[in-house]
Length: 256
Image (tube, rainbow, N blue to C red):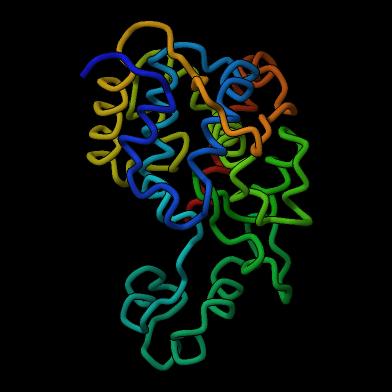
């Protein structure tokens, strides 16, 4: 496949990308120049790694918010320590809000007895989860996603939030080394979906080629502003080894 602009690649690889959020792809295309420049995602390789992870995490734009409508059997399978029997699942089967608060409160910065588990359930390009996850994202992007978590799925900020989380999780050095396993471990806390992530990476590499990535289209959508807030990635990439270790621990717990 020949080299193409980011927008052309996104439209081709995410054919149903506006199904969950109207105008999502247009918002991503419009914000891409500012986001990629300010976060140092400046080569086809880095764009490919970022977009491979985002494509997998949000189902190419079709799964942008965590679905917590679990059956009793599925709850016992996913959280066996919390739901050891069918009886223990009864208050939560088909009750997504109650389930979110049950499984997420008391960790990831979520307050026990609050609605935090539900309010800060997985959303966005890389399924940001937990009050602490949203707080870190707010600090880096300056978007008020703590008071308004739905901003993570706003077409204007969707790509910026996804790339910011990619940076916060310490993925960039591994992407620079073309290490998809390392990137996946940093973002996911493990290697769940690694085969699919590899496939996405291959598709994005093929779509973008090896030349400089064109991130602007000839006719950008004037109604969707670019993201101007994300700071330079230098400070994130120069964190200490201790900082990276702590961030890895946070990442693991927020993905559980």
